[in-house]
Image (cartoon, rainbow, N blue to C red; front, side):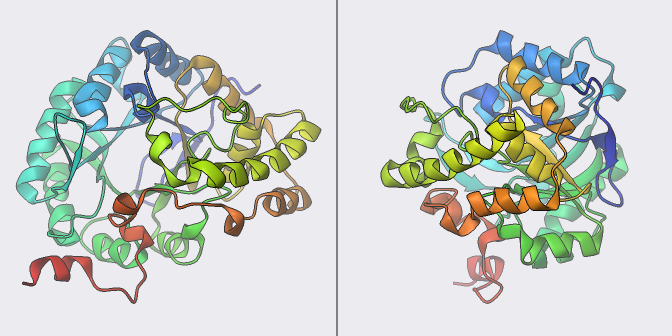
Length: 349
């Protein structure tokens, strides 16, 4: 098994980061109850394996995730890890989401709180979680660029935006990476967004590589999801959709078994095969899950094997959208180029 992760450049202007990164969202209750001690042990396991990139959001657990990472990283040298932080999502005390706010004054406000909670003097990659329909992307990126100049941020990233928005943002300031869902069964970025990112020298940090656990063995037992697990309300995990999707997973499991690996490892290996400019973010919540993910780095897939994997789980056979309707509507990345401009529409009476 690989003991030390290699590094790759994150886009043309971003930092050198570990070949896979750790996603911390699940450590703050999004997938049901979590254990802080186990979460901290997972962060340590990732760092000890050579991981450098840790992804969080200031709204994960309403700040809990950042406080957790502060504890986990307290005894680590700052130069040994990179923090990727999403901001802008508005939350309520009942766990509700109230849209996004990426005005310049909001950028400075959110950043100040993240620096305090994380206990650091800078964020390595700072990004709006979603496109704000009321604020031109140029204003948001310009505000983050001011924080780069002031030394509070090192690089600017984006999340779930389309090709046009990428180009507009890159015209204001270099963009290190686009964080977006990309997996064997979520391949929507391949038509326009990925080519645009490569044209602009923007790296991809791919989340959802395991499709929130669907591309693994964890759901094949039939155990019901907890009520506080957001997948319980996600279309791909509902009723007949889940039944249909698990048939695809069963087909992948047969291929994985022939290679002596898990379905999750096969899915990660597929993502790694897409190019060195794509860095998978793995949402491990336990040390053993991180160890499993690292094992995928040792898998080498031939073109014939990749074709067999894609034939076993065609993206167009996946049942259900990747988010519920209200959340899908917030994704600039899912908007057709022919659809109305969200920013202009939001400003017109």
